[in-house]
Image (cartoon, rainbow, N blue to C red; front, side, top):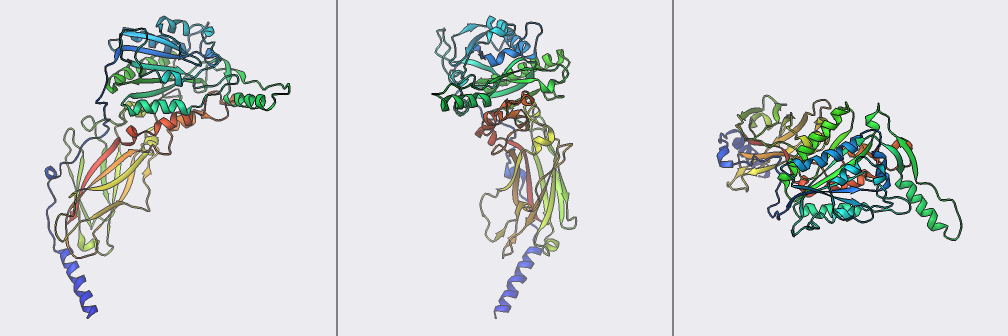
Length: 492
C-alpha cells in the first residue's frame, strides 16, 4: 500500500511539472526598482556659510614639500586651492594652522606663504582631530551661527614627532560622526616632490619607550628623523600628502571635488606627469556614487545557457533609465532528470564613476563587489499549491574576474522543489554591492607601511591602511548598489 501511494505521488508530481503553461507576470505588475549608484542625500542640511576653510598641517614633517628654488606639486596645489576664491561656489577662503591645537582664522594669503616658505612649518606636535572636530562648528570671527560649507584638511598623515604620538582612532571617530549626521566627504591622495627630513612614527615610539624605561639613567635616545630627497625621474617614489574634503551638502561637495581634481590633473600635466601612470593620484570617496545611474549608462549583461535544451532566454529591450530584465523559461521535462538548470551570467562594461576610476582599476573594482540574488515577486507564497522556482549563485563556483577587462562571470542554479504543486513564475533580483567589510582599496594598501623608519619606504605613509581603511567601511558605501538585473524564471 505504501509503495502504491508513493507511486501515485511521483506520478502526480511529474504530471504537474510537465503539463504547465503559465504565462510570466507582466513587468509593469512587478514594477522593478531601477535605481543604481544612488547616494542618500542629507535631508536635514543646515544652512552653511559660502566659504571654504583650509586646515593646514603646519608640523615640521611637512617642510620638505616646499622649496625656495622650485614649485612642487604640493606648493602648486596650495596655490590652486587658493584660486578657488574666484569660483562662484566659494565666497571666501580662510585658513587655520594645525599644531597640537588648531589655530585661529587667517586670510587666504597664508596659503601663498605656506606654498613658498619651508619655515612656515614649525609646529613640534600636531593633532588633526582638533581640526575635524571644528568642521560642524560656526565660523569664528563672523556674525553667523552656522558652519562653513567646505572644509579642506591638508596633511602628510604623520601624527607624531619627538616624544608625542597621536592615536588615529580619534580622527576616524570624528569623521564617522560627521558621516552619520549626513555630511559628505572624500580624501585625495597625491604625490609630490620632497626634500627634507622624514619623521618616523616607529622611531618616535622607540624613543618614547627608551625614555620612559630609563628615567633615572642618562641614555642616548634614538633619532627619529632622517633626510630624504625625491628623484625627478621617479614620480611613483614621490612623498604622498592627503587632502580631506568635507561638506554638509553632497551636491556642493561633488561640484567642488570636480573642480579640484581638474586643477590637480592640470598641475600633473604641467610637470609632464600622467595622472594614471605612474601611481600619483587617487581618491577615496566616502559618500559619492561609484557607478553612473541607469539613466546615464547601463552595464552589458549577457546570459549564457549551459543547457541549451533546457533553457530559453528572452531579454527585454532596455529603455532609457531602465534596468536589465530577462525572462528565463526552463523546460521541466528535461531539467527534471538533474533536478536543476545552470545559467551563466556575464557582466561587462560596468559604468564606473570618476571617483571609482581614481580608486582602482576595472578588474580591481570588479573584485571589490559582493553579489547576491533574492526573490522580489511574488512577495509571499500567495497562490495555493503553486511551486515557485529556487534560484541561487552556484555555491561551488566563485565569481571569476577577467584581469584585463574586469568582466565578471557568475553561475546560477535554477530548480523547483520536489513536491506536489503547480510550477509557477518567480522574479529574482541580482545585485552587486561594494565589498567594504574587511577589505581595503588596493591603492591604500600600496601606499601604507608599518616600517616608516626604512628609507626605502619613504614614498608610503605610516599605517595609512588603518587610517583610511577604517573610513572605507561605512554604511553609505555598504548600501550602494552597483549592478542590478531582474530575472523572470518559470516553466516552459
